[in-house]
Length: 139
Image 1 (tube, rainbow, N blue to C red):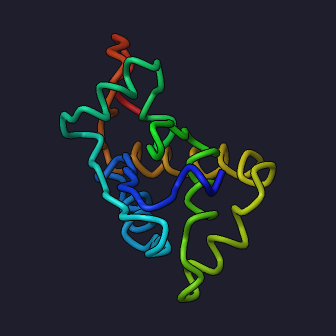
Image 2 (cartoon, rainbow, N blue to C red; image 1 turned 180 degrees about the horizontal axis):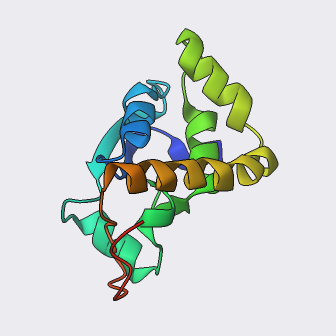
């Protein structure tokens, strides 16, 4: 998978209104030799969000990393970020250690997603609803 992330722009699409997601995405630091990480707010219209929607990926249920023309969604996105993250600083070392395994990422991601959804419900934040499902505006 690491070969998909060489010397290019890597897009990370996430919900900027989620304080936990925003803090995580702001702290992730990728290896300089890998490329440049660009954060994309999923609440803003963009070409990559249109692509995510066309693929049927619900951005309210998982962040997306786009690299090498591929979309990595949810647990696969957090795993991909761990593989390309720098090992500088405690946060990035912990992120790598926690999510370097695809299996462990798939195991923990649903719990992280549930915590995120609960946080957004408490804060009264509405869903992005990029798939346009009626009646699914609130967490």
